[in-house]
Length: 325
Image 1: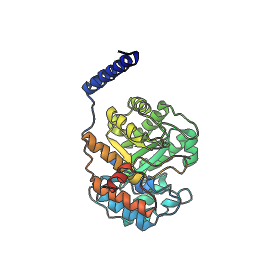
Image 2: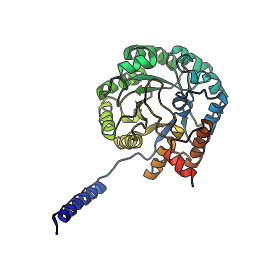
Image 3: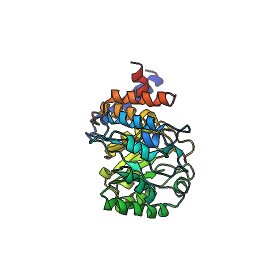
Image 4: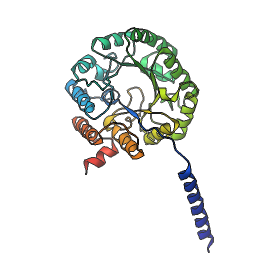
């Protein structure tokens, strides 16, 4: 036997042994995962051309028919900062609300919260960052100042029994500062939880994370926050989103944010591509035997609808594949 063959056989045996060991190792995955659809808000906020109010309402109504239990509807921010969301009240009032679907909205301050409640919001979200520079660029204040600002929202929400979700941006990297320490993420996330947020979504805003980074992040944050209180929000800039989500599932996370047709980006994060596509996430979940309650075929049709409306191809690989069948 030649040296090359011996080396090949030896390598093959090592691979087979590794695979055998891997197949014998139990992998604990959740049986049910909640998908938080962020397309109508996080997906559309970065669109340069204004999307009509009617289209936004139609998109949310169609998503509500797919089996999704959470559809983030809009953002009550100043039109000066995010013009795309200037019709927030009209959108929230105009959608057909299903009893078993939640329609949270983003509220950066007490004024936004009050406007949201007046428009019929039953759940809101606040958002901060693990990066000081990103916080300044995104909401024009420091991390500490943002948390102080959110306290007014939390107090008002508690009085009205309005659930509040928290978002932490740049958990695996910042467009201005580079790498972000997991300890910095844990600190902000813990403060949000202590303020009263029922769930904290950890966002890889610029999509630079890898499964290794995700595991390290969750291991650190999980020391101060129960994993059942966490969600992951992955952008797919480097094609790592599904792998990162799988790593999060292995760690015990049971809530995943995603955007139909892979819509999205971030107005304050140059180079950040879209969110992971909801169609792709649901397809992976089905392959893993994890229930989401979502009708994938209906979801793909919604992706086709919004992509055609925006006059560009869907960013969902599953959407593209199923459209050819």
